Length: 399
Image (cartoon, rainbow, N blue to C red):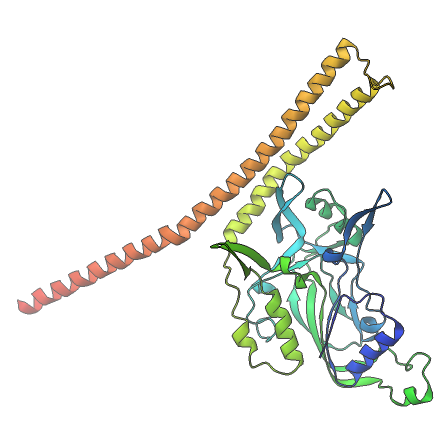
């Protein structure tokens, strides 16, 4: 089988070779992405900051096969976004572009996704089948709260929450993030190989009757940071999966090569079993503190601009400063206010961290200690009632 991940700058010969490989019965797993986070971002060149958005370019292949993948917009979801640390101060906030897909977003009766608990994707696209296209079986769907946003909003933001300001409008649709296509698939080159010779034209295949193709609209799910966490254990670093991204790819490969016997053994779920209620409370707490942080950050920026303007206004051009008594007082007050705002921002973040930790501790205690205790007490009461009935029955028989 052939795995194509994040195609870019392929020449026409490569596109045609992939097309004919599928037409001749080859199996293909293709991953495309409107915004490949691992290859996008901002960088400085010649003193200027450049924003790079890395988008997959499948050329004529997907559209030629009758498959439509939206590569101009990516999905964002503030409800299913992961809570991350962002910024120099390590502020915790919901990242709408990092979407957690749980069990209800994956098909139960397909060997590729049946045994996977959750996966994590980043700014994925959405898949549709064109009219007259191949038979599609959806594998992965987004939550209803996910909505497409222009790709330009996923790079260069100051805070992750800025993504949803780029036209986020949920439509209640569960967008398809992964699907497999089987049956008749027509060639993306119906007129034959570009600039083909007669010999090449004779070998051209126009259609495959039993094609097998899997398409995933995200490439970041391959990155370790999306599904593996490093944990220090007795001086060693243990790599532990918290999502089933690796199982998803391995299952897709084994399905395409025709061996499904071992998929059930591998995809037994991840060892990480997060408390879903804790995750929801983390998102709620981050949302409550977001407004306060934004107000403080705005006031801090205004105060810093005031400090800079006062300092610039008092510059005499010779390295000294000519400030009136009133200006010096105003500058000192602005500096004090700046320090106060920075301290308040840190305290807001500390309160958020403390609140999240407290919520998690209480719920974990409830699940780990209280509930087993309640079950133990209930079992003890049932045992006592049973013994009491037995003794009463024995006294009745003896009488």
